[in-house]
Image 1 (cartoon, rainbow, N blue to C red):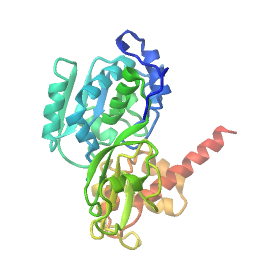
Image 2: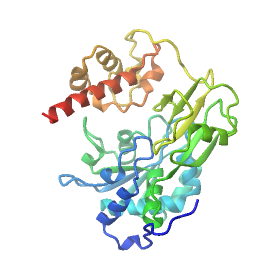
Image 3: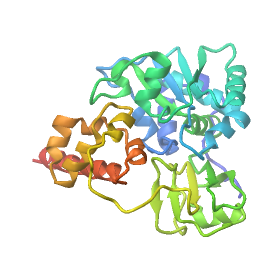
Image 4: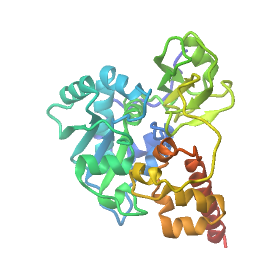
Length: 339
């Protein structure tokens, strides 16, 4: 565990230009730590036809079980503050809003104290899912509405996750690339649930053994949260940069069952935070009508939050259909671009 000589170290980052900071972030391999893993240097590069005036720090952590960002806010305040200041300089903005769900009162207090005297406002948000989705979060903290098919930058906003800004701090002030992260290990089958700081590449098995292993045989292993995470076939897989959680779901914790035909009950429509018709998206995708799903039913506005699946009495895998349909549309676009 020795640190090699010659790694870049930037103590006086305030003296650097935004472009220099952006290069450090890029070289450090920093990506969105909330799960999307979109390259941070790309997300932080303001396009010529755009104007960004607001940074939003996503500290909502709205999925059940996951508490990694919560613990970081309680214990890693200075890293988060420094990361936010660097991210603001890169974007050239003078204001930041921090969105935290109001069930995390200790985190709200800690962050309010940590950001005192800075142009950063901590906003307590109602505890509801999916409060941490970018479009929902931006609207909740700033009142701005992203148009259909649009991106946060279209309304002058860039959103970064708590873990992402902490990684930015490490890269710029200590010369440490993204080689570790804080991950929640939880679920009904874990003997001793914990938030652990773990190196990228560590196996799920090692992380679970560190938490004293299984108390009961898990029914499902999930990478990420229970709503947006992905079920995994094995625990002999590595923790990657976007793994915010490792969940070992016990029997009775999940609402699983055999998929049936849509009964047009409308529960998914009521549950959808984006105001879409998830049942039609799944039916069109199931029938291979991917273009119609995109053009007529707002396919790419779907945040893949999983609320529709949770509400569906027929236990339809709506999000899986949506993801597949998006992939098919993306493949067609790629083919067209290649001529």
